[in-house]
Amino acid sequence: MADAQTPDPVLLRQRLLDEARALGFAQVGITGIDLAADERHLERWLAAGRHGEMAYMARHGTKRSRPDELLPGTRSVISARMDYWPPATRAAAEVLADPALGYVSRYALGRDYHKLMRKALAQLASRLETWTRPFGHRAFVDSAPVLERALARNAGLGWIGKHTNLIARDAGSWFFLGEIYTTLELPPDPPASAHCGSCSACIPACPTGAILAPFELDARRCISYLTIELYGPIPEDLRPAIGNRIYGCDDCQLVCPWNKFAQDAHHPDFRARHGLDAPRLAELFAWSEADFDARMRGSAIYRIGYERWLRNIAVALGNAPTTRETLAALERRAGDPSALVREHVAWALARHATRRGATTGDRPAGCR
Image (cartoon, rainbow, N blue to C red; front, side):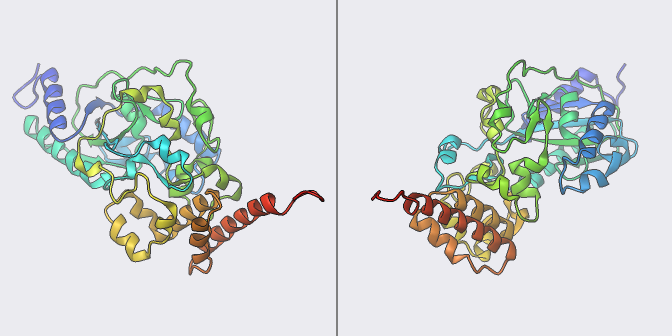
């Protein structure tokens, strides 16, 4: 029976959901901390080297799969989702189909979500304390070793799809996840059941073949990893398949039939900024470092830095049509101070030179 400091579980959950929605979350759920099966999957994934250069994935050890090692005394996890699909933007398919434009993953078109969500989660935890009693807690939004998708699945927010993203029946997969680890024992929600069925549209949709099999992702081939997490050169054999994707990749989500239920973001911070929903590659490549700093500060893109931003655009320009605009943009960067940028520009220019040779120089004798 509930006492003065522990309200009825049904009432508590409804209060939590009402407050979460008032703070901008679309849904919240509660789960315990048992992630044993997911820990085994993570260990196999790391042993296979599929995390690439993300050494922190292995360095954190079992903290990722054992919440009480990250926050001692953790007994419950509150998982929350916030929709991010930016309204009033150029259709993703149109941008991907125009190689003169750059494609930015839809989650990164607006302001950085990390601070916004962490603040909202902290407010949610404070409200919970007023209904129960003071307790230990920490809020996370991609800010610590957390198995966020497994926890969200266990909390009933959705299931992990064959592309390894979380999918909700009523919201698709265009949302962010955040967590509150708490020492308070809360009534858990039932875990979500899976509903991918026989659909495997996401697997062949991956441009680089990073989804090796259902639920098996090799990050080393994933465009999001290559354009965001990788610090050095992008492997040459994967560059053509990147196309015009300059920050992240959404292809596996774009083909998912459950995303017909996705909701537009309500928060104004997630609206597209600086025309990044359909920018011209040549114009982006002309940005100075000061331009990048002024326009990308406060964006998730800012964390990759100017050098990798240029690296990514150079690859996309190498895949773009061989036009005066494309060649001029690349040639202006041929002597860039960054060796990383110069190498990718040289690759792009050589790619265009090969194309021009194939279309103008290799004609059989007698043909004009």
